[in-house]
Image 1 (tube, one colour):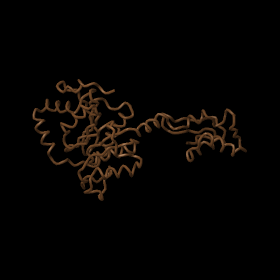
Image 2 (cartoon, helix red, strand yellow):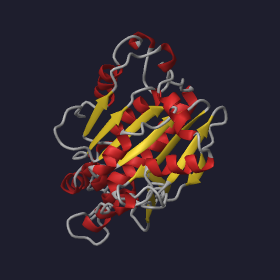
Image 3 (tube, helix red, strand yellow):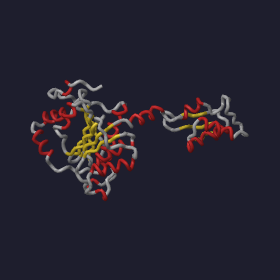
Image 4 (tube, one colour):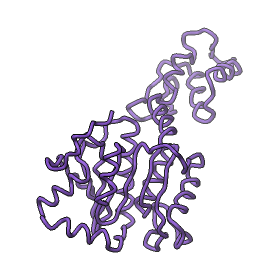
Amino acid sequence: MLRRTSTEVQVGTDPRWAVRLTDLTPSEADLLPDLEAVDPSLTDLLTRAHLTQGDEVSIPSGPRAVDAQVWSLLRPHADGADLVRGREQRVVAVLGLGPTGAGVAVGLATAGVGTILLDDGTPVRPVDVGPTGYRWTDVGAVRSSVAARMLRDVAPRVSTDSVRTPDVVVLVESDVADPDRAPALVTVGTVHLSVVVREADTVVGPLVLPGDGPCLRCLDLHRTDADPLWPVLARQLRSSAPSDEPATTAVVASGLATAAVLAHLDGAAGTARGTTFEISAPDVVPRQRTWAVHPDCGCTALPALA
């Protein structure tokens, strides 16, 4: 609530919902800023206005009163509130809980996702400690257990257990995407987001909607077209030690991944099908690439998800 003049109050600053209430009496203008502290119901507001009678306030039926029409302008943005409530019924699985995966899980929990399934039995490493949640006291503990505690700390109502099929699976992998896991998710029709932490960058995307747009196998086939020995290299990368995740890269990558998942859950306009973002150290400026369905893959022969 921002007081502009003795008879004008501005509510909010975001152009999507900010309004200016003009031609108020000084008493009405005095009353409105109090909403910011106590957020009363309309009935409470009318009662408080009666108690201030002695000034020019005349709430019961006067057209200049702080009435239901004015109150409707002051209510929180309904669409945003509905989106957040809808997230409470959603289930997201995060597989791979290094710094980037942990950042995604925490981001989704604080955004209101009701259930987050966590999968990573490896221990927290010293290089995992950083701004996405891990601390020095966590080193050596199992990542999934520590991540569950982190979620409870920031979002006490979040659940980490469910028998429901996830709405989205986030695959956070090192060096290269697992050539078997993603196709299995396509086969059962599970939406999934790939995040690959590589030697000097992290790739976020694509968000795969089975039957609609390229899958991760499409990307591998494109890479094989460019380098016929890519499958040989990919097998070696799968068995190599995991790449370290620079803290700044993990922060940016986890934010982009969180936004992509939320856009899908909310039914909002997200990134285009087949889009990836490459976040390189040290500048961490995301670079966007778009991939097409590979003609030899056959993934789009599956029925597209509703």
